[in-house]
Length: 430
Image (cartoon, rainbow, N blue to C red; front, side, top):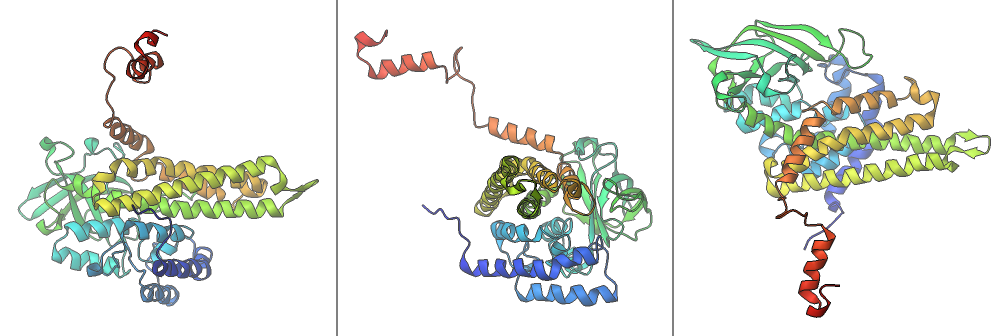
């Protein structure tokens, strides 16, 4: 029986290096160049970020989500989860380490389902950090429910013509190409009738109607686009995988991505907990520091317990994915991770803000942005409510209704059975 809570020493050395590197070299980018991590860098910025990326490559941590044949290290989900915990502290870190969303998921499905030409055209520049990509799936009237998608791709003599609207397509404004999910066979239903297409962003007919921000971001300046695909023509070789495979491809993409999001969220929440503890020890009241107050101690204890439980669960899920090598075998636990993730970040960020008082409510601390981010996590890659349904259905598959009128936990019935098994016959009516 193997049961261990330690990381092997060689990989722990890499994690220790990444921890210091992110803290000293990468986190300052968040302050010096906020919001620019998904913008193709100009010459001056490249002088800064390119050497950082090279240092990551030198330490064999670049694009760690992919195998060696694709320029990664093939570390598996567990090691990748431990790395992502560190990267979650910084908005720039995933870019510097070549594993930023949505590009990680896009790279994974091109690697699994793309032709050699598609890999050369789209995957290689993505892995080299030269371009960004966009995953264009959800729609204004449907959200993430594929049964309600209306964007169509129709065959013609020259390939396919895509028509429809997509909403909240992240990074569309800076992406070099889009992966577009469209209905190709309306009669086949949502799970067999949709296909995916690789579409260069400069293809005629693609119109970004507006960019949508989050929360109090300025109107028109966000990173999530409303896109109109108006007679967008693509050749036959733009099809990713086969016709009707979009839903299966999407599940491959989203499974690992949810674990990556979860571990980055843990790093984010740990940062909030650290700031909470620092402020509790440093802020004085009339009769001592905040850390002496039982309410604040409760905040800290609840946050530590909540974060530790979630972290161990996510690492278990990552280990399970590596063990089974099949996201479908771990579907229940991946969905449960998605359910728990936004609540953990929201709760810890809210407690940290409360300990900071008015400062915690201001834009001079990151807690309000964290809480908004928690809300986004509750919607991204499928809303929390949908994942709760998935968890419940999967859990119920392992259970059966009781035979007869009483549940199996009914104590009088159980006692009668126990007496029938062990008590002398004359005592069974006691």
